[in-house]
Length: 346
Image (cartoon, rainbow, N blue to C red):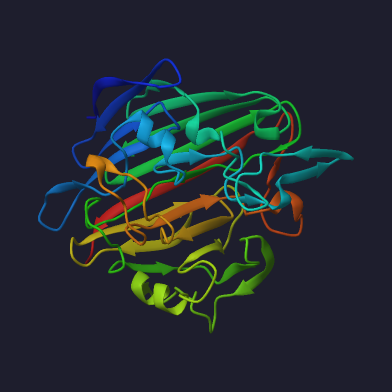
């Protein structure tokens, strides 16, 4: 049985109120905000049977609106980078919001992470919906988005549907920062990460893909598992200062949920395994998180958490040779499904 508990709403400094609700199925529990589709807290049992929050968050609407880290939010219309903040389709040119170096990142300065979503209740979770008008951050077409968060046993399901009345790239991701030892811990460098992926995207210094590369014989080969600390060390001299790379999912067909891999924390015994129907997963070690304000006024640290972001591939709307289906056409339905399975290390 899933229990629901509404919390006192927050005042949105831009006007209106931000709804908050806790969903609890007895194994997992989560707090969801109508702002940005944000997962503010996610409580998961550890090896002592005690539930603790494993995602980073903020204590007020003001703090969420002030930070640029997309803590716990839905990133969109198009997650990750679009080079030059420009699109071209059928002879038309579109200029997007330029909010990161020379590029459009996570949908622009006023992306879906800052929008007020409508929130309603499901039997086992919540459904959020959003309308994004034509020209929103430069993106063409009117888009309708539906987002479901569902708790089923030890799984969190994230399902996103979208439609548009004009050709438009749509690629959304859930951007939670996980620290499986507990969100109040200041480092996730002791976490281990393993991935089944054999390929990743090589990028230029701004994170724009340049080619598909094999993970074999590189520091980014996670097939046997590595610590986040060892990745930080191996990539210390790179522009990313640690892992911030997009892996290509094996067996991707847009329908089946394929296993990306797992993150585990030996101290708490928690393990998170990700399954997704998306063509790529960006792994980001929060390398530039330092200075962001979190809960209880805590100043967050770089490498305090790790993001695993299932998504369409960065700059794929401008690079048709990359896998995936970044452009959504009128009459089609975008469908993102990811399953986050929480277990104890065996």
